[in-house]
Image (cartoon, rainbow, N blue to C red; front, top):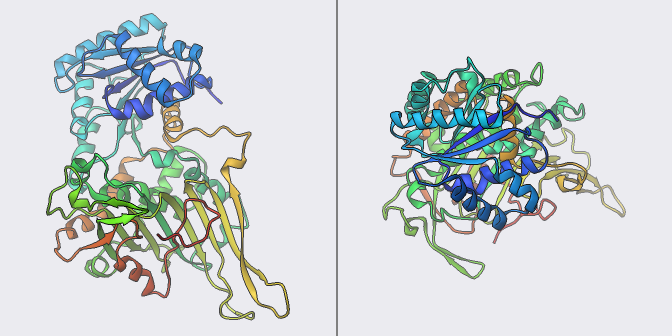
Length: 500
């Protein structure tokens, strides 16, 4: 595996939770596995006052508590960590950052000023930081590459997303901007491409002639925890559907790219986004279900309603569940419904794609013969399950559904990077394949904006008890077509129906 160029990794929001829980552990494991260059610097930036040593001590403590570390490797890694306190809202204060980066260049002997800027900050700073970097020439690529990683959300709605895009592009070009969606860093999401396009037994069947419908589920057992204040201004549509699940849908549905590189793959993703059938008034009323969880006793524990969570308004109408029947207007998928759902306080944590193939056109062995389906499990118990019919032992020709399973954990010889490890490594190498492009982000918001507008309708929200699979109306969405959701368990090989 190629090693990235020597560079400085600058983390804005260096004293925040994302940095402690995800970014520093990911960088440590990349270092431990020899996937970072010998010469590199990590510079934490935030308002909080730390010295290099006090910041290292804080991170040393969190790493040893949360991760399996090797003492000698950890100490070598810590020597690459530095800290600079600045007022990130004050453009003039960025002069301190420019001076510090120049010092680190001399310290580590960098030939080029290669800088990766990671915005692990509140979205309110997404336009401020690029402008301030630009004011001090820290966006210029005359002396080395400059890359900017932006965490979601990429805007709050279509208008704000467009405005943010314009502001960032005033200082950074598109090839410098890496919009990170950690879902795309998961091995099983990336495997959707390899699974489809490297197997002739599946790709010829991957269309409306053989597939009856597709399910995409992103379920969480947890509620909003301590994020009630943030989540109440976001909701399931913005938090999960607009980014994570639409990206998964696109990878399920895309055409084969002419080559495997960032532009080719992202071109095909945009085509899918733009082919999504726009949601009209009929779709919003009949093909969309928004829900909010209510209190319930689950496994002996009392779980409060969403409105009783800390930071949530007593009369909140924020959705914690969305179910949608979507269509793609192109020749491959015309008429094939994609049922997409995500929600909090569902029976288990699971993300998966289910491909339901058409029933046999001549059911010679009976009308009840099981239809084939393919389950692609993204998390947890990552793997693939294929269901098909075989003869039941005994007299007659009665078919029975059987399953074949593959689990990623069985690939013991393979080293699986976590999502943040993979995405950070790709950004350092300049590979934007798994990062959202500007036109794809805008296409997602264009599709979602009618849902955001419809949320204000007083009849648009339904309740569902904690520990269930969402509102009754979400079940009716499929029942109206003579179908039902798959209710998955935590383990891929367990029964198809996991209900409390």
